[in-house]
Each structure stands twice: as structure tokens, then as C-alpha cells.
Figure (cartoon, protein in one colour):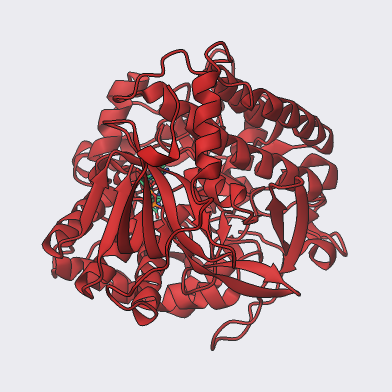
Length: 601
Ligand SMILES: Cc1cc2nc3c(=O)[nH]c(=O)nc-3n(C[C@H](O)[C@H](O)[C@H](O)COP(=O)(O)OP(=O)(O)OC[C@H]3O[C@@H](n4cnc5c(N)ncnc54)[C@H](O)[C@@H]3O)c2cc1C
């Protein structure tokens, strides 16, 4: 069977949003309430989007537990980003944080409460008061199910606002007209296998991360970087893809996340000597230092032979001293995960943990309105008709390392900001020019190549090889040699992607076709990561390269960070597999710039 142009149905909307996670639904809510005709596509039912898995909290300087303000939050986020975050965007996010959290509260989000009725906030990694002086409680939490509570709240609000959802639909490619403006997407209805064009004045990507490019991952199977793939194929560069966050506490062997909220509530990390080793590495923040830092310290303990277990290859996280009552009230899912994935009763014994891939700091470059930007003559120029928010985007507030709970915040703040900007620039029901004649050519070529290649390679074999390469060559500790080798291996793998075949070409719910298309997207994210990483010759945030490590007293590169040469954003271009760079925005909106300094805790 092959797909032909005359089988394709066109549907028109004011706005098409690809992705029904937290970011997509925060944006769609804004648009639907403003009376725009919005279509939201999702590969899964909206409340199964990956945001549902977020556990620990959403940050906002509400100051419910002790003194806090947006300036402290701003400082922590700049420092957490290892000075690669754009300070204007970070200021915007931290100032907006209390507003977007209170909005959710008023929509009915069931946050945990303090005795006085205010929202409960817990400590989290890298959250401090008074510019790094001491930990502060800033993470607004609904037990360890914050994302679940948030996503259901947003879904209900969207249903009330009459947002149109297209459930189990997969967007395949962006449609750009001759001027380069985005005018829609091609999409596959999974149930029927039919192909559509969804035409719109504006397209917003909210497709989440690409965490499945790694072998050991806290991410859902649907996190295949589809937005990144579609953007890359449409000639849009991907920004800062070398920066991937390893979360310190994935269940050893399973990869399932145990929220940083565990350590926020008082859990501690121990090596095989029973030593609370983080006291040595981070005397002030200890177990609550940022994630990149804690992951590396754990790796160091294991490398130096102080790992736990028969193979000395994991670390223990101890929670029993919190007491069963606190664990059941604040961390009920963690207790369940302990039983189900580690066969451990965390109220009685420590649980084995290892750093696991968790979050992509890079993505599709945007400005603070959510508009996707390309760099022209050294300036960011918005691409007309295209926005991106949430984990697929890079605004960039997380820089080289995201602080815990800043992602749920990012998607609320920029989801809403993008919605507001689209409303200001969209007229409901405005006439749209016909789609260009070649609108579906690229998609048809991709689909029909798959349909024709019945003896080609199985997509998941290629995906598994990709994950093994990324795990080995772009891990917590990197070296120039392993990264260069990774570049060669990924380039060779890319050639194999062109040989993926489909044995079953039936149309109805053909998940093999979906997976094959997803692997093409994963490939873009993996190559962007490997190429960007091998080119960055310094240590910054999550990118630690053994060859460039220095101690904190080094005159030009303390801790290996080389601001003179590398305080800049990477841009990877799929076409030609090339890199370019653009400066970090160090001027905040109103605050004083936080000048770079060595990042110690
Ligand atoms: C286990 C875990 C715990 C976390 N805990 C926290 C936390 O406590 N606090 C915090 O701040 N952050 C946390 N994070 C990070 C945070 O949850 C995510 O970054 C965030 O939820 C991503 O939201 P999103 O809207 O960008 O994407 P997602 O929620 O991943 O949604 C993506 C959407 O895009 C759709 N989609 C993708 N591709 C296509 C396509 N081709 N066609 C149609 N639809 C498509 C999907 O179906 C889905 O609806 C956690 C992450 C993990 C993995």
C-alpha cells in the first residue's frame, strides 16, 4: 500500500498545538478561553502525557515556609544553569512563578497544605535563600504526584473551555510556505492510518523531550523528540543539545525515578562505608546540591570503589529515618516504587539508586513569547507562524543544568506567555491562503519509502543500538575520545535509518509504522546531542569532559568552565550536519546581571 496526495484530507484551525502535556494544555487553555479555534494533537490521551509522571513539585517563591523572593530564585536558576541560561528569560520566569501557581490553585489544583491553609513547599536541589546562603522551601507540591495533579487540573479546565482534542494523532512534518512561514502540519490518525493536513495561522509545538535516545531513562516511551525531528527536518536549528540532565536517583537497574523530593524531605545518600559523602563535596547544600553535581559525586564514589552492592555499582538512598507516617503522607508513590521496582521497603531499609537520564536542557530555540527563532545576521528572528514551549523548547532558562521543579514552572509560564502572544497576533477565523502545492511531498516520501521497504531493518533494532551508543558516549562523565567515537557511530547509524522497513503495512493502529517514524525523530535528537557535545571543549553544567577538568583555583577555567571561549549557545543544523553558535543573553529585564563565578555549593 502507498499513500497518495488525493487521499489526504485538509482541516483548518486558527491554531494547531502538537502536544497535550502541561505546556500544550497551558497554552491551549489561554487560546480556547480567548475564543480561538484550537486543535490539540496528542499521541496519547492528554492525561497520559509525560507531565503526569512529574513527582516533586513546581517552584515559585511564595515564601510560605520562610523568607523567599523572585530575586533569590533568579540567582539560583542562573547559577544552576552554570551561566548558560539567558538571564532575561530567567528573570521573566521567576517573576511570573507565583502568579501561574496561584492561577492553578484557583483552577482547583489539589496542592498539599500547611496548617494555615497555604500551599505546602518543600526544599529541592539548588534552591536557596539569600543568594546561596542556606536551603529554602520553594517547591510547591501535591505529595509526590504534582504533575498528575497539574495535568488533570489543566485538562479539566480545557474541557470546560471547549478545546478540541485529537487523541492518538501523530504529527509528522511541518508545512512551510515559499516565504518560510509555518502554515500547518501533516498528521496521521493512528486508529485509521489516514493522513491529514492540519492547516493553521499558527502552529505550537509542545511535544516534550527526547529522553528515549538513552538506554537508562526516567522518560516515557512516547518521549521520542518528535518536535525536534520535525523542526530539524524543516531547516530549524536545535539549541544546546549537548546538555542532558542525569537525575541522581533512578532506581538501580530499572531507571524509574525517585523524586528529588525524597532528599527535600530529608533522605540522604550513603556509600558502601555508610558515609554521607555529599557532606564532603557540598558542605552547604549537601544532598540538596544541584543534580549535575550530585550525579557526578555519586559517579565518583562508585569509580573510587565506594559503591554499594556485590558489584559496588550503586549508591544507597536512606529514608527510613523520616518515619513511615511522613513517607506515606509526602512520598506515597516513592514507597510504591520501592516495593515494585526494587523489592525494598523504604520505611525500613535503604534503596539502591544510580544517576539516570532525565531531562533535555536544549531544544527548539525560542524567545520569551514562545516564538521559534532563527539566527539571521547575528540576531534572533522569529519564524512566522511557529511557537514552541515546554521541554521541546529552549528559551533558555535551564542553560547547562536545570534546577528541579523549574520545568513544571517553565511550561506554565511560557505556555501562558505563548498563548497570550498568539492571541495578540491572531484573528479568530481569519482567511488562510491555500497550502503550497508541495505541502505533503516530504511526508509522502517518508511514508512511502517505509511502505516499500518490506525487507528493511527493524526500527527498534536501530533504536536499541542508538541508545547503547548514547549511553556509552554521552554519559555523566564524558571524554573527548569517547565523544568523537560516538560522533562516528551515530553518523554510521543514521545511514541505517534510511533502511528501516515495515513488514506489516496494514493501516489500522499500526504501531510498527508509528515506531519507525519515531526513530527518525530520535535520530535527529541523538545526532544533535553527539555533535554538539563533541564540539564543546570545556566542562559546564551537565557537560563534564574529563580532558578539560580543572580545580576551582584554575586562573581561566575554574572547574573546567571556559567562559572566554564557550559562554555561548550551540546551534546544530541537521542539513549539512553543521554547528554554529550564538551569545548567551546576560542582561536581565530589570535585575542586575549575575556575573559568572565558580560554581561551588
Ligand atoms: C519521572 C519524571 C519526574 C519529573 N518530575 C518533575 C518535577 O517534579 N518538577 C518539574 O519541574 N519537572 C519534573 N520533570 C520534568 C517535567 O515533568 C517535564 O519536563 C514536563 O512535564 C514536560 O512537559 P511538556 O508539556 O513539555 O511535555 P509532555 O508532558 O512530555 O507532553 C508531550 C506531549 O506531546 C505529545 N506528542 C509528542 N510528539 C507528538 C507527535 N508527533 N504528534 C502528536 N503529539 C505528540 C505527547 O502525546 C504529549 O501529549 C519530571 C520528569 C520525569 C521524567
